[in-house]
Length: 112
Image (tube, rainbow, N blue to C red; front, side):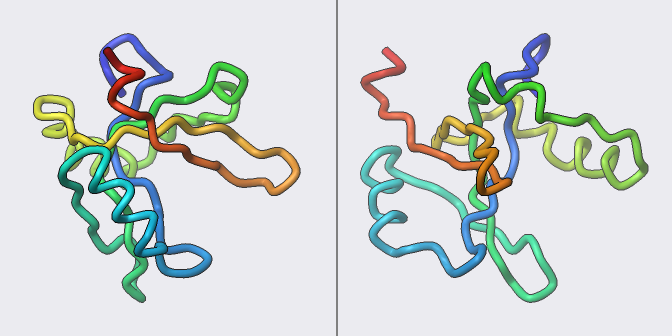
């Protein structure tokens, strides 16, 4: 998390589940931010995109902070992203009906 902000996160957003990310969507990410990085997140190779995530206010209560050894290891591994944030930025909202997080690309003109 960014210091003092539960709504602003850096990390990995799963993009290959339930199926591989649509190449059109990946082009849209590239067109929006100029670059992105996909990394494997699962043993079968499903990928996540390294990004910044802005959690919508009405979804904040769905976030949980875990205090396990694995969570500490992940936090340590992702800490450099706070120093040098990735370019892609997405808003995330919890979809109660589908029981999943849904993301949307934040256009750079909205950040100005």
